[in-house]
Image (cartoon, rainbow, N blue to C red; front, side, top):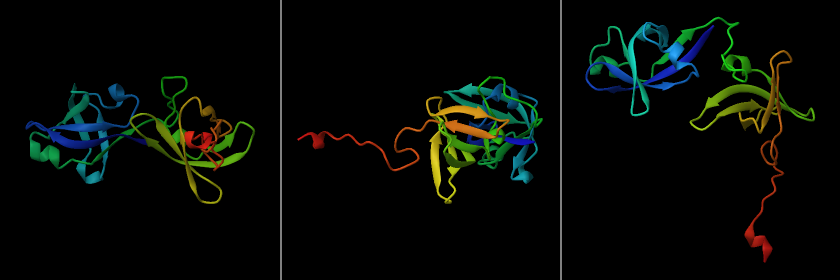
Length: 180
């Protein structure tokens, strides 16, 4: 099975390094020197990581055969794809790969069907489930413990305890203007 583990950003310096937007919880494993990664578009790869380092909070990678700024810049926006065993599980107990979560049914704690996870959006502060509702509309559900109370891979479902207004329009809106 193939997983997108990073997206190449802009070139850094003149020796062929690039910034990368990491899309894996295991960059030390997936983006280590010597790793051979497929690419999207496929014509850009495969790429072998020659070296990596962190600079000002960003991961920089250098690939074998990419020795200057122009070659590095040509790789911008290329997705890096790792081949993994479909049976492999993340190291942490409450961690999941995207492919394990896609297509799970989403239900509330009292059993009301909400929809099906069609995408995981990875944001800087948290991940979001993009859930397609039975009527075709979408709802975004933050993947945080307070809202997603359980993931059952055997039953193929995610259980949520949504606050008012997250999946319906019944939010309680408190306004100081109402007090007069």
